[in-house]
Image (cartoon, rainbow, N blue to C red):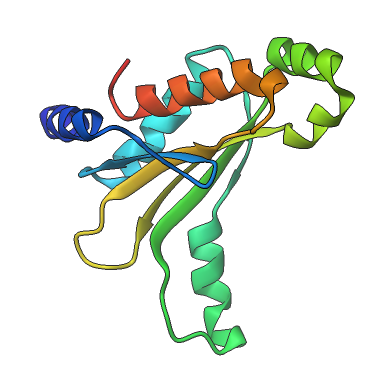
Length: 148
């Protein structure tokens, strides 16, 4: 499995990670659960505590029928929320409005289509005082994708 991730990551990094409308994402040809565990490890291995895991995919699947939805969006989708006391203090000392970015989130999802890649990423904070937080999130995503 790791060889497949490394091969996919290598090809993806040659093409470059995707930056679109403030989102940094990496696509992986891997099992969703493997990537989800790698995201958890990438966060906790930095001494950070995951505050919550939002199971967005199952929630949308569970509520879809009640809303009249006919389209299944995700095979699975989760958002991992956590904070860094050091980086949060630094960012909020620079600008108290940076509170809006805390907790920080890394998402992992797989579209419902057969053979869809697993996407792992985060939303960039387009504020100079959040540069170090963006760097941390990028490191976490890269580690989850097998780059670190």
